[in-house]
Image (cartoon, rainbow, N blue to C red):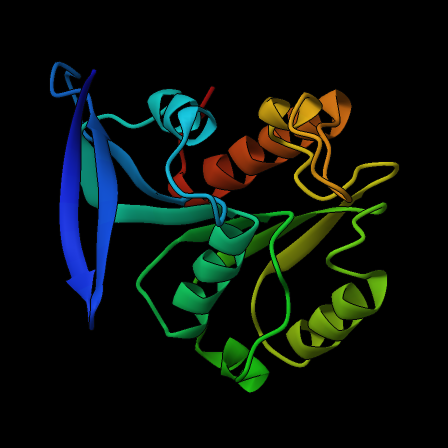
Length: 190
């Protein structure tokens, strides 16, 4: 497994991305763009990326994101990106252009914590209403008792208000993502 830091710029903002790849794989696999939470690329994002990135088949692409990154993944889909699947983990669900959902080509999975104080169940209901008016193949997995950030074990000791790790919700949402990828890519992923 190799990692390469990618530096790029958006207007005046200098940004950094990370490419995780395994060129030793015998065949090409689906490519997954991972958008981290608002704190940027940390150990949790790197660990998630290392769980599945290999040589990429450019016809099988997906995007996943956590928190702010989940919002970013959904916005990429709303922009009509050529993706087969999009997964948002405890991401923001509001959009300045919600009707752009008609542009989504990907299957969509939103993994949401029922105890998320930052993204309310009312926002979830509004997202579901917009998606219901589209022809998108979408699903929502609501995890009982899971707070905002439920996939990140670093939150156990972080002391951030309204954030927390929920092991069962983390495990279940990862399994749901793998199931969606299996459908979208036509391959079993672990």
